[in-house]
Length: 469
Image 1 (cartoon, rainbow, N blue to C red):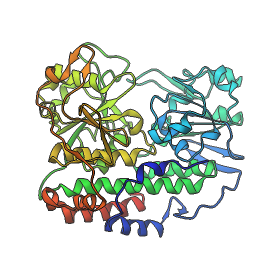
Image 2 (cartoon, one colour; image 1 turned 180 degrees about the vertical axis):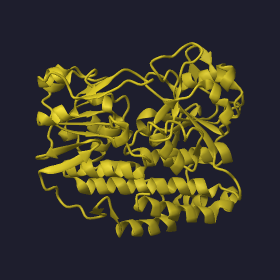
Image 3 (cartoon, rainbow, N blue to C red; image 1 turned 90 degrees about the vertical axis):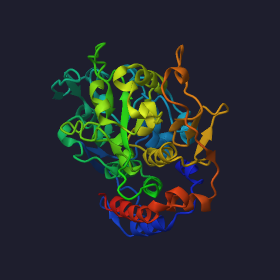
Image 4 (cartoon, helix red, strand yellow; image 1 turned 30 degrees about the vertical axis):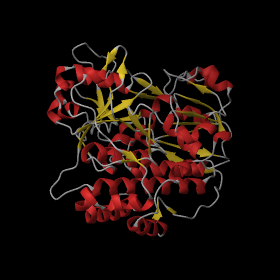
C-alpha cells in the first residue's frame, strides 16, 4: 500500500529555524505513551479503549466499514484502502486520496442493516456516533438481539438515541469512534485539541499495524500547524487583537426550524472549527458556545450574530447547502446584511469534510491563515498553495479552502455580485520561491512588525504540540 499524504507537502519551503527546533524537540519526546519515531509492530491481541468501551482486536482487520470523511481520510492517508470493504456518508474526499477512494463501494447515507452485514465487516470505524445509532442501522435485527443497551435521553436537538457498539463487540466486530463525538458527553474530551486527533491516529495505526505511517501523518499535520501560526504571527502588530471569526456551518441546523428562526449552527467550543481557528491565529466569536455538552457546532439565533461584529465569516460548503446559499442569506437578511464582514466581503469558504478531526486539519489551518492574511492584510496568496479559476472568480487551496476574488458566484437565479453589498476583493496570487515564502513568514515589508513574535509563537506552538497541550 502507498502513503499518499506527502503529496501536498512537497510544495512547502524548507523548514525555518522554528520548525527545525520543533522537529528536534518532537523527536526526543514521548507522546501518548509511545516514543516518537519508534514504531514497533502491533502485538495482537490488542486492547483499545475508546469512549466508554474497550475493544479487543485479535488481528489486523481486513474488512472495515468506514463512516464519514474524517475517519475515511485517515484510513486512505495511511494507504489502507485494501482494508476497507465500503464507506458511507462521504460527499467529498481530499484530491490526493481519490485513487484509493475509487477502489471500494460507497453508500451516500448509511446502508440498511442487510446491505451492511452482507459485506461481512470485521471492524466499524466512524467519525460520528450516528454510525452506531439503531435508528440509522437496525443493528438489533442484524445481530439478532432484542435491543441495544445504551439509550441516551432526548434533548432539544432530537429524540432518544440507542447505540449498539457493545453489541457489535459481543458479535466479534470491533469498533472505533472519534472521541469528539462519543455517545455520552462525559466521555468527550473536556478541551478537545490536536492531542485527541493524534491519539486517534496512533490508535488506528496500531489497530491496522501501520504505525510508521501514523507517525509520518502526525508530523505532516504538525508542520502545517506551525506554518499556520507563523503566517498569523507575521502580521501581528503591537496591541493588535487576533481577527474575530464567525463560523457559519449550517442554516437549518436543528430539527425544529421556523421561518422566523431557522436555527442556524455555528462553530462552537470544542472541535475541528475551533482547532483550525486557534492554530490559524484567529478568535472564534462563539468559542464559549456549547461548552456544557462539549459541542463542535451549536445553534445560535441570527439575532445574536451581529453583536459579535466578526472581522471575517467562514462559509461551510455542504453537499446539501452550499456556500453560495449561505452568502445569499447573509446578504438578504437585515439582521446580517449590515455586519462589517458582509459589507467588506471578508469570507473564506471551507469544505465540510476538511473540518472534521482528520488528516486535513493542519493543511486547512495553514491555508486558512494564508487566506486571512490576504483578506485582512492584502498579502498575496501563494500560487503553490492556491489555484485561480479561469475567470478569476475564486482561488482554491490544496486543502479545499477558497476565497472569492473578482466576483461572487450566483445562487439559483440571484447574481450575488450585484445583490450583495461591497466591492470585489483585489487579491494577488503569485508563485513564491522558498526564500520568499520564508521571508514572508518572518516579516519583510508590511509583515515586519510580527517577525520576532512569529518566531516566538512558532516555538511555543511546537512545545505545546509536542507535549499535547
